[in-house]
Image (cartoon, rainbow, N blue to C red; front, side, top):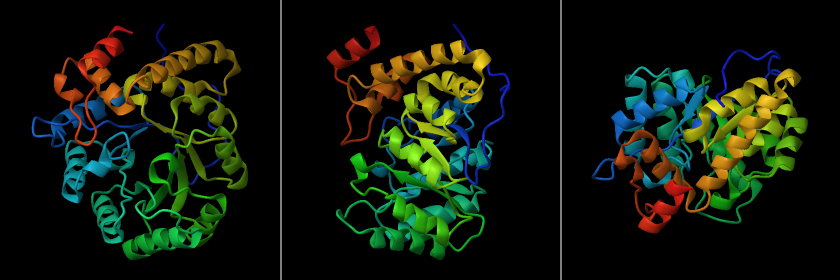
Length: 309
């Protein structure tokens, strides 16, 4: 059963300072030298937008960003903008461990007309205080020194080991109310997301796990930035648009079931490698299966099991 992407009967609830809708945490295709394949990425980004995504969150965890240099990250963003993808539909990751590189990547995005970035905290040093994380974010924002900037914080403690507490978020919003406008929560805790929706009115709380878009949307969340959207963007877009429309609840539930099934399928083995293998299957382009070490492609047995599911 296919879903149509007509306009919702019920308008999005609330007014948000940050991004709203469905954003794909886009995969990064690699060429034979394991460098980002710009042309294939642009084609994938266009397909995601055609499938209903509101934007592309490139160079995040799913995009293997922390395996790429500053130069490689800049070049991929430039390729997307040069290819005609509207800068306002791009949300690049610019948070890295080095303060000066985070500033450089953020300034570069702004120079291309890209205003909204997704920013990890510096993640190498562990057990740092909220004061330290606040100082890191504040230093980047103040050094960039551009009122156009909009920052979506990135909470993914299972990877970064640097959680973003509500007290820290409150301080950042108070200090930079027009700049710190949202958060991607990839910890998988719907309770944490709903608590932020309630505590921070107008703050764009974005689910980082595909199945949580629906409950978050129904409780006032702003949308999602998710990995399985690389495969089921149309269903996620339908869920976002119609989550509040009781007359289409059955269709929303069917779309939700497909999203959950694909998420589960892609999580049987290493998720990013599985998403890339499934994208290779969808496109017929075997190059999609490549990963940059230390991440590895699925082995033959895993590939056979995944593709036969």
